[in-house]
Image (cartoon, rainbow, N blue to C red; front, side):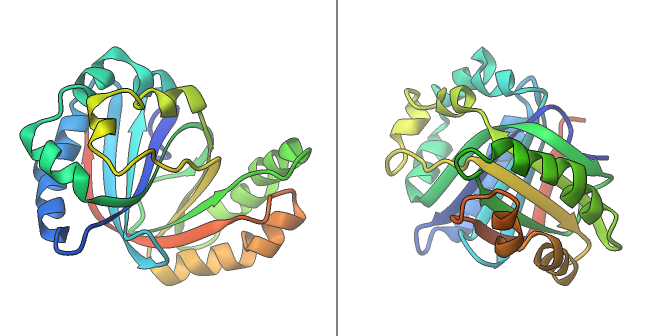
Amino acid sequence: MALRGGAVLAIWNDIAPGGEAEFDHWHTREHVPERVGIPGFLRGRRYEAVGGSPRYFTLYETESAATLAGSAYLERLNNPTAWTRRALPMFRNTRRTACRVTLSLGEGIGGALQTLELGPARGREEELRGWLTGTALPTVSERPGLVGAHLCEADMAATTAKAKTDEARLGQGPDEMARWVILVEGLDQDTVEGACRDFLSAETLTRHGAAPDIAAAVYRLTYSLSDR
């Protein structure tokens, strides 16, 4: 199946040297299960970089962007566990964005995923969105070995709902934020990188309306948990 629900929470981060084992243990044993237990959170996935950075990418699929600004989620953000209080100060280079799902194509979850962080050049938003949703991503999704191609656009209100919570104060300062996020999923790294190179290169994206500040990274799936 494609992305579940109408929104995602995308988080990229590194971890302070020496903290990786503790992060892995906390993230899989407590944090992702806690998040997926919140009403409206449908699935959580964790990835590790095989090309590019930051080292980790986490994706939560939710019913809607309202889930990511809702009372149940904010209650957890304002009541972090003791383990969370120890873990969050280890985060480095964090980028966190709540997004509305504009288009989601495909079935299943791939073992590899490429993230593309981008945004439209001034005055070219409709052009870029139209090309991505009408041509590029449908074409990519049909390529052998690919299982998903998704476009997600930042929701500022849902992203910034965290800003005044207790968890926000445990980090290293305000998180950076993406504008648009493209996710391309496939069976393996080579297949995903090849598809993005052929159809979604920085040169191709800018030609169709993207601003030049495009960031790409490739990840392998290490953990996934659904609400049922």
